[in-house]
Image 1 (cartoon, chains in turn orange, green):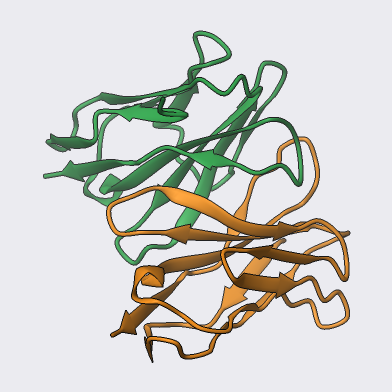
Image 2 (image 1 turned 90 degrees about the vertical axis):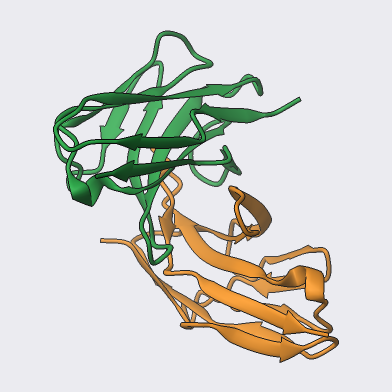
Length: 113
Length: 113
């Protein structure tokens, strides 16, 4: 079956530090990959996505590249802000009609001023 | 305008009761979903539904059932509630199958006592 593994948190960084959150996946075929972000007390919002190998998704200074050879989709940001504090979820979709997302366990990011 | 809305936001009930959570989307999407988020933030797909097909995660107890009165609504009915059903339930919608972004509602926190 499909699965997503991401680094456990919490990850605590100072403002303007570099962020990496690792994500690896197991899936048959060629899934689409996503990063979602959940701010406290809210639902999930799409942060970025990539639908095929070597695609790079980017948004709000965050980036992730779909690496088929290493089955990875690591999230990076060059300079984090306090407002980036949230829980980040890596997810995959198998590109079939059901489109049911499989999520990783989530990584809590805390950014201190 | 809220894209995906859920009611109620909080639901406290006793074991053995039957309850429903409502979900509405005004995005014109044709596929809707229910997810369960447990106390450790782990997210699991429960159902994927469009007007042609219902896909059920095989691990979901048959006490849970989705009901769709029309394309814009997907309600979640839960019979004989158990303590382990306590969680946050998220509704989501998307335009179509794999690779499409899913838009999430704000969540319903269910507490079973």
